[in-house]
Length: 173
Image (cartoon, rainbow, N blue to C red; front, side, top):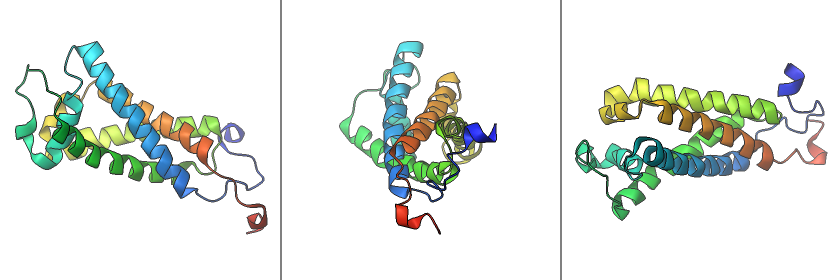
Protein backbone atom coordinates (compact mmCIF):
# COMPACT_ATOMS: atom_id res chain seq x y z
CA UNK A 1 0.00 0.00 0.00
CA UNK A 2 2.85 2.42 0.80
CA UNK A 3 4.24 2.00 -2.73
CA UNK A 4 0.88 3.02 -4.20
CA UNK A 5 0.72 6.17 -2.07
CA UNK A 6 4.32 7.33 -2.30
CA UNK A 7 6.01 8.97 -5.25
CA UNK A 8 8.95 7.18 -6.86
CA UNK A 9 11.84 6.49 -4.49
CA UNK A 10 14.26 8.66 -6.47
CA UNK A 11 13.76 11.66 -4.14
CA UNK A 12 12.43 13.78 -7.00
CA UNK A 13 9.57 14.99 -4.83
CA UNK A 14 11.30 15.31 -1.47
CA UNK A 15 10.62 19.06 -1.23
CA UNK A 16 7.32 20.89 -1.16
CA UNK A 17 6.49 22.92 -4.27
CA UNK A 18 4.78 25.89 -2.61
CA UNK A 19 3.88 27.59 -5.88
CA UNK A 20 2.12 24.44 -7.08
CA UNK A 21 0.33 24.28 -3.73
CA UNK A 22 -0.94 27.84 -4.05
CA UNK A 23 -2.17 27.27 -7.62
CA UNK A 24 -3.73 23.95 -6.63
CA UNK A 25 -5.62 25.84 -3.91
CA UNK A 26 -6.93 28.35 -6.46
CA UNK A 27 -8.02 25.57 -8.82
CA UNK A 28 -9.66 23.54 -6.06
CA UNK A 29 -11.33 26.67 -4.67
CA UNK A 30 -12.82 27.49 -8.06
CA UNK A 31 -14.10 23.92 -8.55
CA UNK A 32 -15.49 23.90 -4.99
CA UNK A 33 -17.35 27.17 -5.49
CA UNK A 34 -18.89 26.13 -8.81
CA UNK A 35 -19.83 22.69 -7.45
CA UNK A 36 -21.38 24.09 -4.28
CA UNK A 37 -23.40 26.71 -6.16
CA UNK A 38 -24.62 24.20 -8.77
CA UNK A 39 -25.57 21.55 -6.20
CA UNK A 40 -27.42 24.02 -3.95
CA UNK A 41 -29.42 25.12 -6.98
CA UNK A 42 -29.94 21.74 -8.69
CA UNK A 43 -30.35 19.42 -5.68
CA UNK A 44 -32.00 21.74 -3.16
CA UNK A 45 -33.80 24.19 -5.44
CA UNK A 46 -32.17 27.09 -3.61
CA UNK A 47 -30.38 30.13 -4.93
CA UNK A 48 -26.87 29.41 -6.20
CA UNK A 49 -25.90 32.77 -4.67
CA UNK A 50 -26.59 31.44 -1.16
CA UNK A 51 -23.04 30.11 -0.58
CA UNK A 52 -21.39 33.45 -1.47
CA UNK A 53 -23.83 35.20 0.88
CA UNK A 54 -22.82 32.82 3.68
CA UNK A 55 -19.12 33.50 3.02
CA UNK A 56 -19.55 37.28 2.85
CA UNK A 57 -21.51 37.20 6.11
CA UNK A 58 -18.27 36.17 7.83
CA UNK A 59 -17.11 39.79 7.34
CA UNK A 60 -20.32 41.73 6.76
CA UNK A 61 -22.41 40.02 9.44
CA UNK A 62 -25.51 37.88 9.24
CA UNK A 63 -27.63 40.77 7.98
CA UNK A 64 -26.43 40.05 4.42
CA UNK A 65 -28.09 36.63 4.56
CA UNK A 66 -31.48 36.53 2.84
CA UNK A 67 -34.43 35.66 5.08
CA UNK A 68 -35.00 31.92 5.40
CA UNK A 69 -36.96 30.53 2.47
CA UNK A 70 -36.19 33.44 0.14
CA UNK A 71 -33.97 33.47 -2.94
CA UNK A 72 -30.50 34.93 -2.38
CA UNK A 73 -29.97 37.61 -5.03
CA UNK A 74 -26.86 38.00 -7.14
CA UNK A 75 -25.08 40.94 -5.53
CA UNK A 76 -21.68 41.88 -6.94
CA UNK A 77 -20.46 43.41 -3.65
CA UNK A 78 -21.33 40.25 -1.73
CA UNK A 79 -19.77 38.00 -4.38
CA UNK A 80 -16.55 40.06 -4.40
CA UNK A 81 -16.27 40.00 -0.60
CA UNK A 82 -16.95 36.26 -0.62
CA UNK A 83 -14.11 35.78 -3.12
CA UNK A 84 -11.75 37.90 -0.99
CA UNK A 85 -12.47 35.45 1.85
CA UNK A 86 -12.71 32.22 -0.14
CA UNK A 87 -9.61 32.35 -2.33
CA UNK A 88 -7.03 33.24 0.35
CA UNK A 89 -8.44 30.39 2.45
CA UNK A 90 -8.25 28.08 -0.57
CA UNK A 91 -4.62 29.08 -1.11
CA UNK A 92 -3.82 28.51 2.57
CA UNK A 93 -5.43 25.07 2.38
CA UNK A 94 -3.50 24.48 -0.84
CA UNK A 95 -0.23 25.18 0.97
CA UNK A 96 -1.19 22.83 3.80
CA UNK A 97 -2.12 20.20 1.21
CA UNK A 98 1.17 20.68 -0.63
CA UNK A 99 3.09 20.10 2.58
CA UNK A 100 1.06 16.95 3.30
CA UNK A 101 1.22 15.56 -0.23
CA UNK A 102 4.63 16.53 -1.58
CA UNK A 103 5.97 12.96 -1.55
CA UNK A 104 2.79 11.25 -2.72
CA UNK A 105 1.72 9.67 -6.00
CA UNK A 106 -1.56 10.43 -7.78
CA UNK A 107 -3.50 7.88 -5.72
CA UNK A 108 -1.98 9.14 -2.50
CA UNK A 109 -2.62 12.75 -3.42
CA UNK A 110 -6.28 12.05 -4.18
CA UNK A 111 -6.80 10.09 -0.97
CA UNK A 112 -4.95 12.50 1.32
CA UNK A 113 -6.56 15.45 -0.46
CA UNK A 114 -10.07 14.03 0.00
CA UNK A 115 -9.28 13.39 3.66
CA UNK A 116 -8.03 16.95 4.05
CA UNK A 117 -11.23 18.24 2.45
CA UNK A 118 -13.34 16.23 4.90
CA UNK A 119 -11.22 17.49 7.82
CA UNK A 120 -11.69 21.10 6.65
CA UNK A 121 -15.46 20.53 6.50
CA UNK A 122 -15.60 19.04 10.00
CA UNK A 123 -13.42 21.74 11.58
CA UNK A 124 -15.18 24.61 9.80
CA UNK A 125 -18.77 23.43 10.27
CA UNK A 126 -18.62 21.63 13.62
CA UNK A 127 -15.86 23.46 15.53
CA UNK A 128 -15.46 27.02 14.23
CA UNK A 129 -18.94 27.79 12.88
CA UNK A 130 -20.93 27.11 16.07
CA UNK A 131 -18.76 29.64 17.91
CA UNK A 132 -18.25 32.28 15.24
CA UNK A 133 -20.66 31.78 12.30
CA UNK A 134 -23.81 29.94 13.43
CA UNK A 135 -25.51 30.45 10.03
CA UNK A 136 -23.06 27.91 8.60
CA UNK A 137 -25.13 25.27 10.37
CA UNK A 138 -27.41 25.28 7.30
CA UNK A 139 -24.41 24.00 5.33
CA UNK A 140 -24.16 20.87 7.46
CA UNK A 141 -25.44 18.52 4.81
CA UNK A 142 -24.29 16.14 2.11
CA UNK A 143 -23.67 19.01 -0.32
CA UNK A 144 -21.28 20.74 2.09
CA UNK A 145 -19.47 17.51 2.93
CA UNK A 146 -19.29 16.35 -0.70
CA UNK A 147 -18.09 19.75 -1.95
CA UNK A 148 -15.31 19.84 0.64
CA UNK A 149 -14.22 16.28 -0.12
CA UNK A 150 -14.13 17.17 -3.81
CA UNK A 151 -12.16 20.34 -2.97
CA UNK A 152 -9.55 18.14 -1.34
CA UNK A 153 -9.47 15.58 -4.14
CA UNK A 154 -9.11 18.32 -6.77
CA UNK A 155 -6.45 19.95 -4.60
CA UNK A 156 -4.52 16.67 -4.49
CA UNK A 157 -4.82 16.06 -8.22
CA UNK A 158 -3.91 19.65 -9.09
CA UNK A 159 -0.90 19.66 -6.76
CA UNK A 160 0.45 16.33 -8.01
CA UNK A 161 -0.06 17.51 -11.60
CA UNK A 162 1.54 20.93 -11.07
CA UNK A 163 4.44 20.15 -8.77
CA UNK A 164 7.93 20.30 -10.18
CA UNK A 165 10.53 17.68 -9.35
CA UNK A 166 13.72 18.81 -7.66
CA UNK A 167 16.29 20.16 -10.06
CA UNK A 168 18.87 17.55 -11.03
CA UNK A 169 21.59 19.30 -9.02
CA UNK A 170 19.51 19.05 -5.84
CA UNK A 171 19.14 15.25 -5.72
CA UNK A 172 21.97 14.77 -3.28
CA UNK A 173 20.60 17.01 -0.53
